Structure formats: structure tokens, C-alpha cells
Image (cartoon, rainbow, N blue to C red; front, side):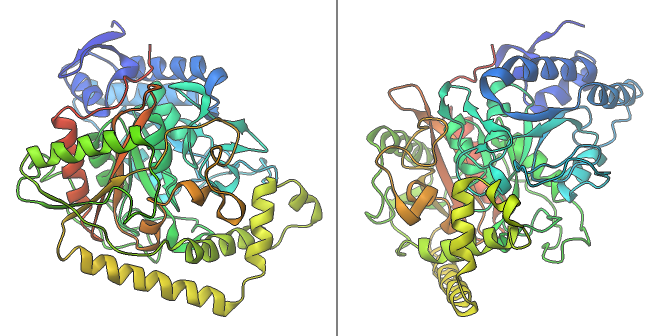
Length: 479
């Protein structure tokens, strides 16, 4: 079989440019084999690794063996599930049987059996996905860019001098670069949406509990697993796979439901949309970012949504977020000795020290602030179906630093330039970002869509409407 096909609606493209749905359609028709697709993705991963550093490890022969088994199932017209033969990557915070989960840290010992899959990874296997490898993360996923003492700096496929974002930066870079159409990320303060925005891919943080997590995150109920993909339709398919069954290992999982794909193509006509360009003047947004996001909002209006500029009217909840986030970091390092602490990323070591000084009353006050914010957003969504904001106020900045030049300092850290993302981890709402244009340097700009808890399908439906109307970022650098 040849390694070049035409995917419907996209024009000629190599196999590394296919969406998951495009691959599945080609498998069904016998035009492409899972082995062929997997080999192309593995070759692409090897080709981009030196420049981007998006992988901790790739599976190689094991992935090809999985693909061969999938190819035989397709030959018999008996695919195992919804993603049979589709190459998928996994962020290296999620346990993956047969591969060490090193979490970007020199404190993690690589030796061991590594015999258990995280729930999301287990669901992907059950549906026949081919696991290509593990993607980079900052140490324990603690910050909004991806670099770590153990694995170094991950870079942006659109400009390797820039950051890919984080903490799911390896996953976003891999998807954008063609090293697999799907990846599983995690998001505790924007860690799926930040790198998706910087790299020009789709990333979604579902309602908390929709995708079960195990082991549980040290950052508690701020942390969500989420799909990262080329578009909303692929992400909806992936989300339905990962959320499709109950998993007793996560006591906080919400009940499995009927999925998100049924109304995916229903459009946005009649939806009530609030557009908040600056969260009520609290955020300074780069002009190129503001213009691109405004264009996406106008596109929703042109498709029949009722759009008005309106703010959710909350003060920046960063102090409550810091209390919860830094306390989680302190919990990570609680049992570490001096040598292990000295091996940590200096920034992580600093916030561990801050978190260790909080008391129980500080933590409970942050929980109270979180609940108040959740109530405020619940009331807001009785008026508006969707909230639309920029995903980030800036585009990708220099790789290897935690904050862009001149944006935030001191105790604000990475949260100084992510004010649109972490509030919705506090509230546990579904939120997604998709590319909506570029800045003058050609770097992707992301727009964020937020809905009430358990309205994940509405977020995906609006995102799909934007994709269907031609809203895009830069071309994926997969050549």
C-alpha cells in the first residue's frame, strides 16, 4: 500500500496528517493498513524528536505488533472498538503498562514492573488503539510550560525556539507535528488547553470525573484527564472511549453517560453565548490574540448564536488556586529526603516550600472560595449556554522559561499568564480550546469555550461548528 492518500475534506496528505476518523474510514475501505499508519507515525516521531523533544520514549516494535493485530481484525471486518488501529500517545503522568511513568522527575525510579494502565489508557487499549509512546511533561505536571530536570525542554512545532506550553506540552507538540492524531493529556490548571493553544491543536478538559483518574493526582480534584486531537470530532470520539465505563479505582468518577457525539453536528443556532474578551478588564490581551478570538466569536454569531459581550464577574481566584496547587505540590514531596528535594526543578522545590506552610484553615478557606466561584458560574450558565474567552492572552514565548518576558513575576509564577484557564479547574466545568488564527509571527492563537458542568457535548458542538465554518490556525507542520 502507498503511504499517501486523500482524506475526505482535507485534500492530499500523508498518513501523518490524517485524523483518527480519516484513518478509520481508510481502514474500513482497505485503502490503508494500521501497520502502514503506525510505521508512518513512528517514523515521524523519530524525525521530529531531535528538534522538539516531545517524547520520553516510543514503543517501536510493540506498537507495530499491536498494529498487526489490528490489521488482522480489520481484514476479518471485526474491529475491536471505536479506535482500532489508531496511533495514540500518552502523557507521561498516566500509568501505561509495560512503560515506566517517570513524570519528568529524577526522583522516580525507572526499575519496576509497571504492570497497570491508568483508566483512560485501559479504555484506549480495549478499543484497539495503538500506543505509540509516552510524551514529555514538566516535573509532576507542576507548571504551564514543558521542561524538566529529567527530560529537558520541549519545543513548539511551529517555531522550535518557542515553548510548546504545558504541562501536556509533549502531547500537543506530537499531535501538531503529526506524531499521532490523538494524545491523552491531563489538566490541573490549563495543562491541556495551554499547549493546545500554543501548538494549534484541539484540547479539552471535560467535566471533572467524566474520565476516571488513577492513581489520583496529588493536586486533587483540580486535575482532569482530557483528549488532545486535530479537531473536535476526533476529540469527541476519544472522550467517549475514555469515559465509557465506570472504574472502581476512582471513587470520584461521575456516572458514565450516553456520550457526546449524538449532537456534535447540530450547530449553534439559538445558543446564548457570552463573550468575555478580558474577564471584565482584568486581563491584558495581546492585540493579535484579541483580534483572532473576536473573529471566532463573530463566526458563532454568523451561524445563528445569540452573542453578547458579558463577563462572569468574578475576581481573579489565583490565591485560592495557589493554596490548593502549592499544597498539592508539597504533598508530592512530603516524603522526600534532602537528596530528592535537591533533585527537583527549583521552581517546584520553591512552591513545595510555600505549600508546606499552609495550614488546614488556609486550605479550607480556599475550598470555600472555590465553592463560591462554582456557584457564581452555575448562576451565570442559567443565562448563557457558553462562555467564550481567549485561551491565553499571549502566543507561544521563548522555550525554557516559566513566564514570558514582562508577564507576571514573584508568587504568581505561570499563573500570571494563564488567567483564562485555571478558574475553570476550580469550578470543574468543561472547557476546550481550538485554534482560531495566528499572530503576526504565524504562531497559533486559541479560543476557549466553557459550558456548565456536565454540558461537555455543548462545548464540543460549538467547537465543531467553528471547525465546520473554516476557523483554523496555521497549517500543521507535518511535511
